[in-house]
Structures are given as structure tokens and as C-alpha cells.
Image 1 (cartoon, rainbow, N blue to C red):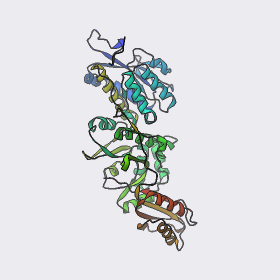
Image 2 (image 1 turned 120 degrees about the horizontal axis):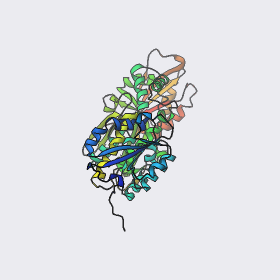
Image 3 (image 1 turned 90 degrees about the horizontal axis):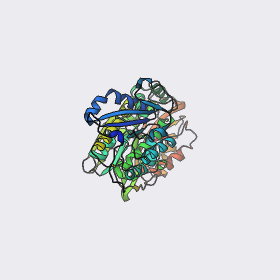
Image 4 (image 1 turned 180 degrees about the horizontal axis):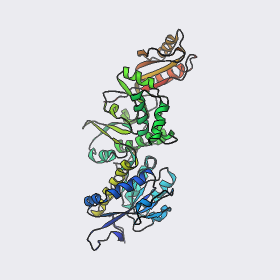
Length: 451
């Protein structure tokens, strides 16, 4: 017999004597997000079931790290074998919350091969294999939920995919990592150093013991790759996205930024350029204090979507934490359950049914105005030497700033550069970096082109 293109319920979904169906889910991976998801479900189960009109049962936890799960009660099965979960005929929806790539990919592919619905919060998995996951879910006639991959508990992906499906996006700008945003805004608010703000973020649980993945921008790079898929229908190789972290930002940079009516945030940006090229990056940027993203503080995430018809849409919300992310995971579960009950077919989790490989704009071809901070051992002729190099590279200086009462042996001063091709700035900075009076390499940040 030929298989009908419909989602079929397992035997566990048959109508019971009470006349209500029961849908069962399993969580694979029980760390911060996994336990947060379980808590949200168990605490709000009655309300969720009222929305669905059916029972939603947490059947199994795959606890790979052997954490304490006694608080779940005796009705929830515990296993350390994810294959047992995927092969269980009573499980309808598998929630993958492992992290990393290798095992998570194996779980995801096996779940879809078993014709079970899949929900994941794994940004690396979706950034690198999102199109393949979408195609496999469509072929299997099941659904794929990815809402928790970007901006945690903020329903950003749903808004792009559904609420703004008629829009033609020209750009997306995002503050997508709560750790880096907490550090930067604390440095700005209190005038503390990067190291002090990082230590506090670690104490409060906002930063990992090894914060490299966050502070160097790698976490954010996966997220902007996903947003490029949803906003532009273009697939981007993650390693092709230029990335720069926040470790070189100093409290003095905020003092200079404020004098320029700007502040500093780690911005993930993707913009359409002529010839349908995509300009995409993750790096610290100077942004106007009057902009909406400048008011995204602490561990909050914020995204500015720029469309050529509906205008600008800004969304902010909690981007990390077990329970906020668990809300996003559970929203995917509820959406899938509703579709199952209605006999629906698979959806388009990435917003498109066809994708094109992104044509990435050549590095350095963008036009930028820039902030350049130099730290020097003060002596006569410094400004003349720097200005001479900038002039040779056809770069105009907009302003020169120097904070008063700074030490002469480690003197920071700032030049703002008029808009020019970024490759000219990079070449000039490479030459300036070789000057003998510099105490450290120049720091350069572009001024963001926010609408």
C-alpha cells in the first residue's frame, strides 16, 4: 500500500474511554534547558492541556549526565539510552536538548527516520544542518520545531516565519547573546573592566566557566546563520561569517562612545547588498544611544528586523536560562500537538521550501565609518605619523578625542574615520599597528548603519 501524506497517530493516541487523546513526549538531554522545559510543563500542564484539548504527558527523560531527577516523580521513565527513546512506539514527540553536534545530529536524524516529530534548541545543529533537517522532516511527514534556537524565550522565529511572512527583509540586526550583553552593559553602567564584569557574570550563572564560546562571538555566529535562512532564504556556511568578540573592549571605550552619543554592543548583522549579495558579520559596533538596540540591557536579547514594506520591527526578551528557553521549547510542542490533532502535515520551520546558497559580499567591500582607539606611549609627532598613514590610504578623519588626565605612558585616544571602504581601513590599521610608540594593537569598531 502507498503511504498517505498524513501525520498518523501511534496507538497511544487512540481515543480513550474518557474521549480524550494522550500525546507523549520525551526529552533527550537534561541539563539547564531540559530540566527547565520539564519544570515549565509540569507546573503548567493543566493550562497547556486546556489549550490543546488533550493530555500531554512527559513520558521519558534521557538523562545522559546522570543528574538528580527524583523531583519528576515515578510516572516519568528515566533512561540513559537515547535510542530507546527514539524507538519507543508510544513517544510522539522527541525534544533534543543535548547540546554539541555529533550526538545531537544522530538523535535528530534517527527521530525523523522513525517518523516522530522533533523539537530542538540546538543552534549549532540547525545552523549547520537546518535545511537537511527540514527536508527530512518534510519527507517523513512530521514536524520540526526550532523556536528555542535563537533568542530563547522570545518568539522571534515564529514572528519571522508566520507574522511577517509577507515581508521582504532588507536587514536584520541582533543582540543575540545574553552573556556578552550583560558584560558590556555592566561595563557601561558601572565603569568596571571586562574581567570584573565577566567574573560577576560567572558568579550569577550568566557565563560559563570557560566563556570563550560566548565572548568570542561563536554562539552568536550560529544564530545569525539561522536568521539569514529565515529572513532571506539563503544558507550560509557558518565558518564563512566573520566574527570578532568583545574581549578587547575597555571601559574607556564607553567614555568615548558617550561623547559621540553612541554605545557599544556585540551586533550580529545580515544585510542584502546589490547583486543579491549578503553582508553578514558578528562584531562589536558603535550604535546610537537613541536606537532601540541601545536600550537592550543585561542578559536580554534584542532583534531589529528591517523590511521594505512593513518597516522596522523590534523584538526583545529573555534570551537564555532554562525556564525561558523551556517556554520556547514547549511552544513548539504545543504547535506540533495542535497540528497532530488536526491531522495536519509538516510545516516549513525555516520559513522557505527552497533555499539558495548565500553569495557573501567580499570582505572589506562594505562602506563604513569607523571608531579607532589607539593606546600609545606619548611623545611628539604621534598624531602626524598616524594622520599621514590614513591620508595615504585615502581615509578622512572626522574627529580626534582624548580623555583628560590619562597616564602618558599608556595614553588612549580616539579617531573617528569618515565612511570609506572597509578594506582601506583594514590596510591602514595594519600599518599603524607597526608603529613603535603603540602600547597595544589598535581597536577598530564600525558605526552601525541602523535605521
